[in-house]
Length: 85
Image (tube, rainbow, N blue to C red; front, side, top):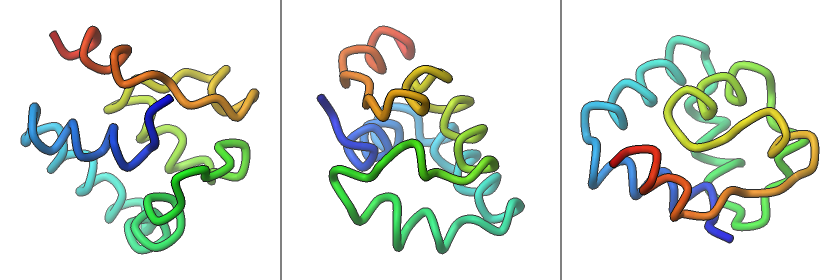
């Protein structure tokens, strides 16, 4: 199971434009600092505690779906590589 940080870093390397857009959306939602300090910092961050705007943004740019947040289950990195291929 990959961490949120691993998915974030994968996006930065393999889709820099998407990575920039994700960060811009976090800034616009006034969630960038919280995301960087709280969510990315912890490998086992509880997905059910993620705020609404961050959840929406993660589902848009990373391979997260509603059930990941409901069940606190992180997707595999292979789910991301399949999605972006």
